[in-house]
Length: 381
Image (cartoon, rainbow, N blue to C red; front, side, top):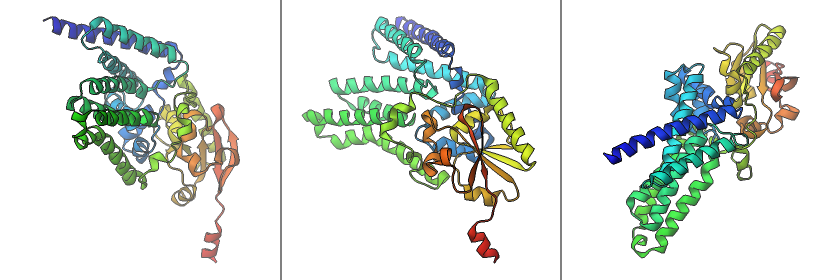
C-alpha cells in the first residue's frame, strides 16, 4: 500500500514539476522553440510528402526520436497547425525527463524529489542560453537513465545494467548528433569496466552484443533510411563537424517567438514574387524553411525543399519562374544540406542562382536563371 501511494505521489509530483518547467520555458520567451523544426517535419509527414520523409532522416542534428515522439500528439491534437500537439508533446517529454531523473535515487523519495526540483531549476535557468527543444527534454531523461545504468554496472555488474546502457544509449543517439560523444563515452566506460573485472572479462562478447548492439542497430537503420530516402548511405552525417557541437545548443537562429511573424513573412514573399510572374514558385530551403512555413497552409507558391539541386529544379519545373529562399547560416541553420552542397550560396550565390532580394530575419531570395545551358544549346544545334 505504501509503495503504491509513493508511486502515485511520485507521478503527481513529476507532472506538477513538468508543468512548472513548461511555464518556465514560456516565461523565458522561447515558446517559439516548441515549433522549431519538429512542427514542420510532423506536418509534412502527416501530409505524406517527400519532404517530410527527407526531413525525418536527413540530418543528424534533427534526430528522428523527438519527431516520432511528437507525431502522435500532432496527429491527434491539430496536426496541421500543431500548437496543442507540440505543447502536449513538450509536457510529456518534460514529464519523462523528471521520471528519468528520479531513477538516480529510486529508493529515497526525498532525494528523488530533490533531484527533480533541481532538474526543473536547471531547465528554467538554461532556457535563455540553450535551444531547449523537445529533444533536450527527452535526452536529459535518457542521460539520467544511462547514468544510473552505468553506476549499477560499475558497482554490481549484471546483464540488466548492460541492457539499460545499450537501449538508453541507442535512444539517446536518435535524439541528435550533439549526443554522439556521451554515447561513445558511456559504451567505452562499460567495456573498460568489463576488462577490469575478471568475472566480467570472460563474457566480453556478450557484454559487447548487449551494450553496443542496440546502438549499432540504430545507426544501421538510420543509414538504411538515408539510402532509401536520400539515395546516400551517410547523407545525415555529411554536415556533422566535431568542432561545432556546441552550436547545436546555442544560438538556434531562425526561430520566431511571434506566430504572426512567420505568417506575414510568407505573405510578403509570395506577393513579391507573384508581382514578377503569376507562375512564380519559391523553394524554401531546409529545416528552417519548415519552421517558416508552419503557418503557411497548403503549399502553393512557397514550397519546402530539403535537398537542393538547382539543375533538377530547372528541368522539373519548366516554364515557371523559380526562386530559392535561403536562411542565414547561423546556429543550427548552418548545418543545412544546402550549405555543404553550395558552400558560398548565401554570400555569392551559386551556378544558376542570382541574388534577388533580402528579407527579414536574414532570409535571402535567389532567382533561378532560366537561360539555356551550353549542353542544351549544343543539343538544339
